[in-house]
Image (cartoon, rainbow, N blue to C red; front, top):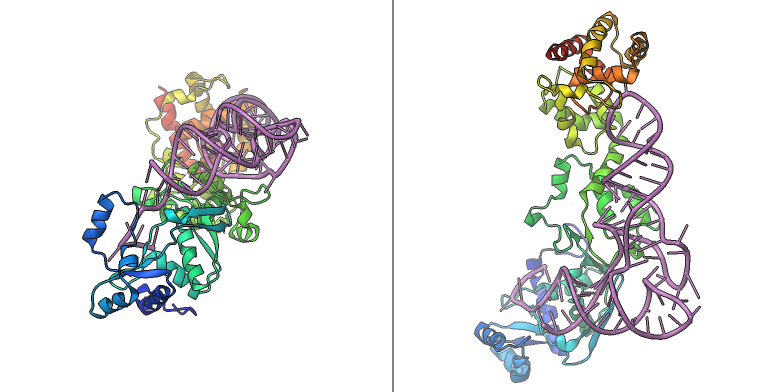
Length: 404
RNA sequence: GGCCCCAUGGUCAAGUGGUUAAGACAUCGCCCUUUCACGGCGGUAACAGGAGUUCGAAUCUCCUUGGGGUCACCA
């Protein structure tokens, strides 16, 4: 809309294509063809690999024009030379050559008067002053044909850059149609758009230096055609997760809060937990946003946790140690007014000394009693701060009672 | 099948005749540590195969193998 080379709707450009198609016929680089679908089908059945130029040799231009004048349907075919080689230089693949005898006289203008892509891409790109054509490798070997058209018109050929696809595995490309995740799907999965862009940019291209993390601005500045790869690359979500975690960590607090809130709300945490505290614990521990529910599973799944979690071989503690320590800990906690992490931590560190136990062991027991989870997004005192005094004491009591 | 293209670790990738063949993700180990994560240090792991050319090939040539693309009145 609003560009300088419109119209941009193919059907609105019909006259343009027709004008150039007929012009191409005048130069001999194309010709009118009246062959029926039946004849074409027979030709193919007979084993012919390409059209036999029947109408070029058997229908004179005058006759063709007369038949067209009567309203007989026709197509315009490209007249590929019977011999010779067509060559061009792709900016990433280098020289690409094809024998003309291997090329078919493709249809340029269909019987409904509309162009095929074979024709439209050349006409449009030239008329719209396109200097660089960047597209998928599936066009790599079709390009020779298109160049013949540029040449016939005496037009300057554009520069070509063909790109390999992103693959799901070595044999299949990544494709929404076969169920692979789209950009939007990754956003829904909890990826940051800049991480996706960054990762995709690294597929099939690499900067001259060793950078892996590049912002859009960095990419614009670092991009060069020489960095483009000739071979397809397989999509590796693992690496994208890693990049995402990098961007996640450097997100301003407020930004992260906006992103995490919907997840907290969905878990029904509103009013029950301090979102700011949750953010503080989670932001550095997440690779993608959608990990939030599993990281917070311990908030609800507590009552039936496996008591053997109290065992820790390295710290040389087990359930009986827990049974012994927990009552003392409970008593101590009741005396502590503030459950603010730093205060609590210092206090309990000293408490560990008093009761003659390694602080690491004390914290392990306390964290398990508090959360019932082997892995939590924070240490014992951080979890206590998150739960607050009342709930902390309650949970520890529950765990203690279960120890019998 | 014809034609075109591609080929370095599990993955992304540097490398353009002489390198101990980078780096990153993943993985493994150690350190740090109130668990985990982060971070730090280190390990395992690659030139598809075969002939040439050359004093010397991951780098050049050819063949083989493997993979992809293309052979529409689709784009």
